[in-house]
Length: 201
Image 1: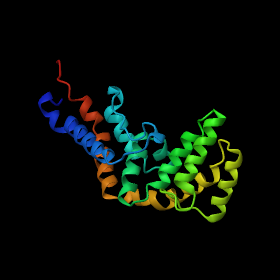
Image 2: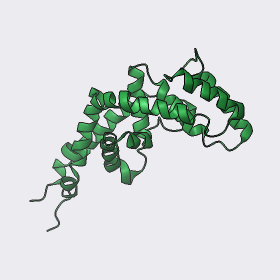
Image 3: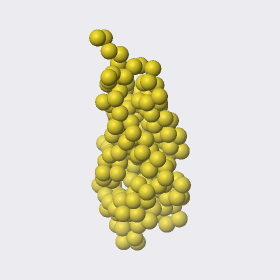
């Protein structure tokens, strides 16, 4: 027997609304800098992608670190989590490097390279990342003739550190576990949603 519309709001719509609310609250804790572009802004303007993309996006974050970093919502959620551990500098450095590699002007490249070095790499930097002395000195040498790859080694090491250390804790965090549960519930509802239209027979 087909469901009536009266039952619809208490199932699919309310679950989707609750899920978006939880995701919005989580992402609101992230305040990524301008170097991260729009990574801190949840993407839910496209009507077609709302429920399906939200749930699949969130569930995909646990599949691999690459999927998390390729998702703007995932990056923002991960950043919000890292802030609770006071370790967001590694992700902010990684994001700054991603933006840095897009620069085409040699003058801007050199200027931005020194700014990133002063902010994240040099000793006593305000957002000093956890890298070894050899990598720090190699990066310092690379700045003498800045190219798009001058932070490649340092970026790779901070990424590995996040993947092995912070990422597993993020997946085990109550905040993500709660989001994943909501995503699973939303993702499991399409068949019931599609049957919620009133019968014309």
